[in-house]
Structures are given as C-alpha cells and as structure tokens.
Image (cartoon, rainbow, N blue to C red; front, top):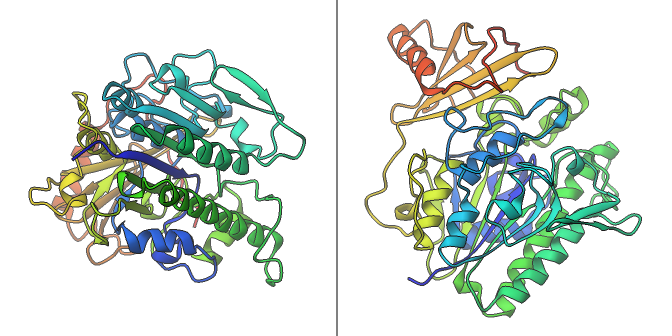
Length: 429
C-alpha cells in the first residue's frame, strides 16, 4: 500500500449531534452525510479533552491528558507552547516523506515560541497562532509561516482557509501530503457573513447563524472532496473529519439553550468543558475510496490513536511512550484490532475560581467514573445501558467505584502548570 495523502479536518466546538449522519434534523450537512455514507462513521470516538488546548495537544502528540504536557487551557487565553521534546504527528509524517501543512487554528504555541507550527513539523502554516486571536472571524491579519499577512477589511477567515486548502491540494497533488485543516467553525462568535440557508427560519438570530456556520463548513468540505475527484487523487487520499470537543457552552445560558435546541450533544449529557460524554464524545468520519469500506464502527477510539494510526499508514515511525492504539485494523477491515483498557479526561480551570472535573472510562466493562474535585464524591455510570449518564450507580457497585477511584490517583502525572484543585463545581445542565 502506497502512502496516502492525509487531510485531517478538525472542527471547533462541533457537537456529536450537529451532523445529519449523527441524527441532526434541523441543520443541513449534505456533504458530510455523503462523506459518512462513502466512508466509515465512528459511533464511539472521543476527543482528547473537553476544551481546545489539551484536545489538540493529544491529537498532535498521541498522549492523553493524564500523561500529556498540556493538560488544560491556561487562564486569560495565554497558550502554553509545546516543548522541543514533544514530538508531533506532523514531525512523524514529515520524517516519513510527507509535505506537511497546517491551515486554520493552531493554539499550541504562538509565534516566537517553541511550539510554533513551523518548529513542530509543518512545512507551511497559514492561520491563527493562538486560541484568543482565533475568536475573531474578521481579523486584521493572519500568520503565513513566520510573517503576519494583512487582510482586507471584512475578510472572513474561514473562507480564506478554504481557499488556501484548495490551493494547497492543487500544488501538492503529485507528492504525499498531510494537511491539518483546523477550521474555527462553529465556535462563537456566531457572526457569519450571512445566515443562508436559514434566513427565513423563525429562530433567534444566533441559532440561524450557528446553523449557517455548520452548513457553510459542510459546503466547503464538499468543495475539497470534489477537487480530489477532479484531480484524480480521490482514491489516493484519506479525509478525516472530527471535532476538538463537544458543542460550546461558554458558561452562557443562551448558548446552552441553543445547544439543547439543536440537540448538538446528541443523546449525551453535557457540553464543552464537561467530562460527561456530551463534552468529549465527538463525530469521526474517515473516507478513503477503494481502501476503507463504507460502514459504521463501534470501536472505542480517541484522539491519541491518530498518531500510531497515521504513522502506520504513512510507513512512518511511531514515537515511544504514547498512549494511542493504531486503528488500522478497524479502518482496513482486518483482524487484530487492539482495545484500550482505560480512557481519561479532565477539565482544570486555573482562573480565579479553581475547579476540576475528571473522567475515567473502563472500555471493556463500560463503566465510567466522574469525579468533581480531586476529593469529590465519585459518580459511576454504566454506559452500555445508560449512555446519557443519568443513573449514578456508585452506591450500588462500591467495589467498582473504589477500583476506579484508585485508578484516578495513578493515571494522572504531576503538573506544575495544572495542579489538581481539591474543590470542583457542578456541570452546566
């Protein structure tokens, strides 16, 4: 098998239930629904964390939040950069002979830091270097490699990213390439150039805009797939679509009401910042015509699995000490798929009100433990018959609760940047 081109599209704050192929009925996503029908749709895929920074770090390094260096979003939006010793997926693929590009939101090291994209394996970078700047869809400038590029007034950054992605595929079509297309849609603010095709809907303006942002992204991913077909590299290219975590709450009741209106979290409890499944259970679509057979996979996977998976498909070298497990047997319909034992997530807020939430999933038995605060009372859910996490079984199964409590205390490495607060707070319901 020759090295496939790899396009990894990461949406920002896209919920499990925001796509038609995952049950959405109000928001139109025809291109991604077609991608799901032509590829593999994962029913049980998890992000690297419930907020942007640690989730993206997990994707890039193959280490879960307990072992990874970046465990949370720093306060005031100041990005903590990846270190020189943190090997990224881009570095692995570059070493394997790929041309590598990052387009969109980075957030793992601003310009001048050790974590800047061109220092972490990307030959080309165009986009936002930080989380904070990515929250403005109409910026005065973006970064192109190590230079700031001024933009025309009113330019919508998402559209520029799509143009850049299409141009890059044109340029690199004759050589193996890895494009990390980190879209910023549908993260707030909800202010797209227009609200088509929902202008006539009797919804609040913010709802129309949110839906329009998702449909706009869907349209542009369709353009990208159409170009692969036009260039006759469709069968040589694997396209992946996922989201960095659950749909946004921003601790804003109006946004939370919108998430509920669209059922953006699907059948799950919670949303962004929660370690209930609504905050971490995300869509995953993988399309590679002629190689990946269409279907639905129930394999339990997470962001750390992309490092070994893509390294194997690219004939690269998987770094030692990662937490991921290759999904190649599942993708290629082969025997021998290994399974995770435990999956771990956390949310640590190091702002004025320190808070922590942790989650641990026993993959084989379906038990999921939630701990609010490092000394908080444990919640225990059996996901096999309670995917919505509504029935706390901790008192019914004290031995399971005790076992998972002890596992919490061993799975998380120490961190001076993100010490684990003792006090927590309830999730936004």
